[in-house]
Image (cartoon, rainbow, N blue to C red; front, side, top):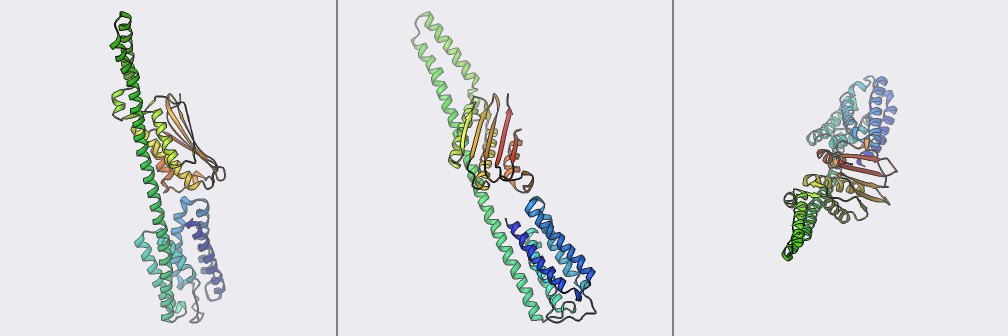
Length: 379
């Protein structure tokens, strides 16, 4: 949002600078002016196009704006026609480029470099304005202009950095909330698994002991023996020891815990569950899938706008699972998401890839977004 606002402001201010330059062209070298004007137009167009249509490449053009402007400042004597006599009120047209360029430097470059640029631009203007190439202006007036230039740039840069800091705090709070939900989901899954095993012990083991305690005839003893063997087989199939030590949970318990977390964090989502089974899910995989799912849910809540439909489909298979998060919100173009935005590349795709899972994203402006998370085989 800030980048788009800046691109509009940059276009307006640079247009003003070029209009003033055209008015001054009789006092300048036309060839040098038009070369300089072309460079300004190119960087303004680059910023506007990338900010609105290719944000991942915007930093390059934002960084080019201060470079072009400082080059104009340093090369100003080449613009000036020495045969012309300048009045003290003469204002070189590059004055209008300095403030907006200093803002770009302070918000794009490293902090120390940005500060140095703002100081250099203000000092450079002071020297230019008081020189014969700038009309031999009054030192006090030139000093005031340099101070205002520095103050303007410093205030705007501070506001932008403050907004970024607040946005970072919000993102951090959202991530902490997601991590808390993941821990709660893991605890829920373990508790559900314990309850399931308790039921298994009760239904199989205790029933067997009860039958055995009442066995008197040969048939009753045989029945008790068969019941005991069946109970032992069931416990063996459940891998009782490994599961109870929370190294893994079952698909049924995982989906139940995940469903509960989704309802607590985003109740507007309609959750459906299909094909539950006892497929074992290692704890690290369950954690990664939960984190990725909750991140996709959080992205939908923050960026889908006024979506009227949000749903999550949880589907199990004999050897895997699929989670589909969808909404009918504003959508976006995945190819135009900046590389430094971690919500998709790291928090979703990266997490799932590390557990040998797959993520596919189907989204376009105006048609909503669907994120599909898959793990294991779908046989």
